[in-house]
Length: 217
Image (cartoon, one colour):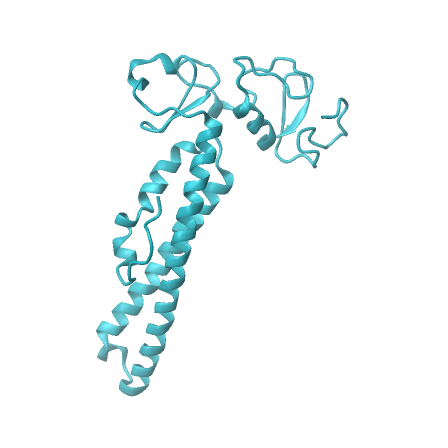
């Protein structure tokens, strides 16, 4: 890492600064780069990656500070979906819970989100194919019968598939966006998103699809 970084360049990734944040010693870093440094640190004292001088705990913002003990968070409680500091780890209510490091939790949930996205994109492709088939069938019937009112079942099925495609596409977009931007401050949203996108909670959207392959974890 360069001792005297070029102005406007992050000394961690060596690329132009993005969402620059400043440490107490006035060194600038990309927010994402400094976030990764903080999450990977095992020290109780947060230091500048460049000069190693101590930094204030809130250098990245309130999301990285425990609201109960005003200390830097270091673990993620999977049961409660909350970020924990070293003092939180000693509390009785967290003793039996899984508490991976934030870095490990981010890596783990990124993989789960990516697997879920891949599976749902396949489902989305099948829904879109069914929608096209239903649209072609509806157009053919309309040429024969002339009025959509004369084919309520077909029209209802096409409308249902159209809404299902939109809803599933929005869900996939949310999953992929969350995976791409996942950090300590957004970890708490992951469990809810995985629950909403679980196969058993998408029966309504996927009811027209034949089951194929194992369900995503």
